[in-house]
Image (cartoon, rainbow, N blue to C red; front, side, top):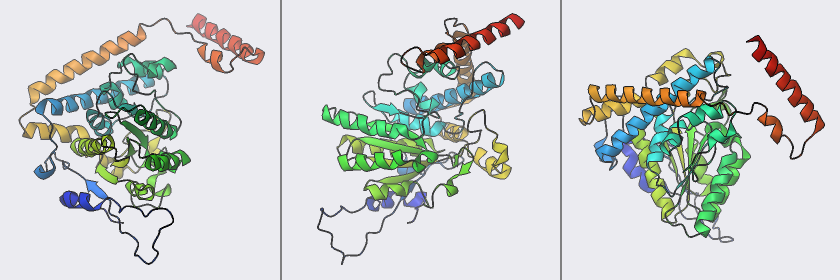
Length: 390
């Protein structure tokens, strides 16, 4: 296995697809084993400079839309962290540093595509039309916060690690059966999910059935406190695609243009009926796994600082400035607009008075159970005491 650098992207693409497998029962053991190459794609360097050969065909309006979506996603993430620390919402998984992956891949999708994500895809969900306050509802215990009108092709947040990969394959299979030739599925998951059996089952059947699904692994190098090198001996996660006879691409996950281009090409391939693709987007989790985690116990400060310097937002902003598409006045206007949007979302969320505090007890069993009712009564009694003391 080898990984190509950005200068070899074009030539590597031509050689990265494994040769067609022999028909069942016709293997010729006298032939040498095929040699595989995994493409590494980077378009913007860490200062926002571009390799013009690989610049994606995106109009200025789309580029600015992408940057603005990433800024909004970062602002929402920042506010969710503050709200949790103030005791105004519950435990939250944070997405800082993942905006290029979430937003750029979503920009490549169309309205007929399905978004199947985990719990670290805030930017993508916002781009699909989810209201900002939904995340606040969801992480305050209101499951309905994971759905929204118009989001019929955006699945609810998947908390179970890797489970959504199977859903993605099933949806893609159903879309093909229904003759939806313009429909594909984009499935997001973390590097920890590649240690689950669901990951391998999903890739295997996606390849066997040649369904239109794009698997995007956000490799932020940590499965809670377990580093990537203790999860797998593979040099890349992208190379796991080889076993399932599908293209595997590794991209710089902090490079929004590379993520967009890789996703765009994979979606085009899927819509042509050429099957699934695995994209490994390499980034770093610069904040805690969730707000219940303490990453200072296992992350090295020097490594963290190194990755913070690769932040995807200033990288894309510098690119826009170089293209004369962005300036300080536009940034000030955007920051003010985003703050107003987030402030309004918090106000909307905290104005709600229709929460049923004992709702979780309703869904433990399908029918009423006396033990659950005893616990409900105890919970409500404690809640009333707290209200009286407050």
